[in-house]
Length: 238
Image (tube, rainbow, N blue to C red):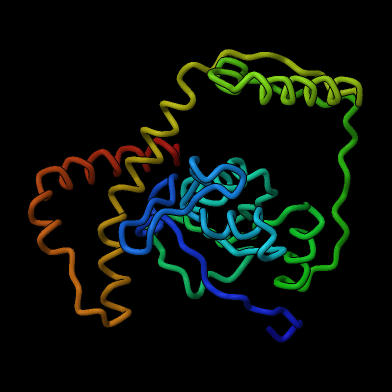
C-alpha cells in the first residue's frame, strides 16, 4: 500500500487452502476463465483466475504443496513460490510448522513477478542470467510427458529444442518413484500437521470453532500418520 498498490479485493480459493481444484462449498467453485467447464487449479485458484481474466495484473497466493504453481500452470500464468523467509508470512493461515507455507505472486509476465519482489523485499539487485551452454538438464520424460494433451506436448517438446539450441545438454532420466516418494513423504508430513495448524488458526481468530469432533473421530488414523510423519521428517533430514 505504501508503494502505491491498489487493493482490488479478495478472491476465492479451495476450502482450508488445501486442495488443487478450488472447489468451495461455502463460496462456490472457481472456474477457469479460459474454459468455465475446467478448474483453475488450487488452492489459490481465485487469484489465478482473476489475473488470467485480466481483472488484476497481479495477485497474491500461498503455496504449501503446489497452491501457486498448480494454478499458474492451469491458467497459463507465471507464479513464484519463493525461498523460505523471502516474503513476510503475516496474514496467512499456516497449515504446517515445517516451512511448507510460502506467500508468493501470480502474474501474466515474469517481469511483474520481479516488480513485486523488488517492492516487497526492497532488493533492487538485477537477476543474473546463467549461460545455457554447458548446462546439463535432466528430463524426467516418463513423468513430464505422460498423459499430456497433444498440443501441450508439442509446446513442451519445442521448449526442449530451444534449450538445446541455446547450448544446454538435455539428458533423459527414468524417475518412476520420484513423484510417489515426494507425495508419500511430503503428504504425510502435511496431513500430520494440518489438524494442528487449522485448530490453532481457528483459536487465534476467536471463531469459537474447533475440530474436536473431527480429531476424536480420526484419532487412530492421526496416531498412525504422526508416527509416519516423524519417520518421514527424519528421512528428509538424513
